[in-house]
Length: 83
Image (cartoon, rainbow, N blue to C red):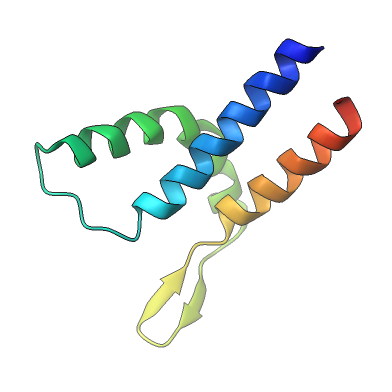
């Protein structure tokens, strides 16, 4: 069970890092863009279905994507139950 807990914790950390990296523009072909793409490949399979169910919250001219926060909340609840 500890392997599952460790993997879930690492995945949740990847989601958190992806949230932070979304605040900074990544130049094409740079290291930051490569890291963002790698994190997207790991986190998108879970985030995309949540995005489909939960539309972005409109804030003026932009939208706030709440799916990472929902996924982190559910992940932390899973960690408490499993670990």
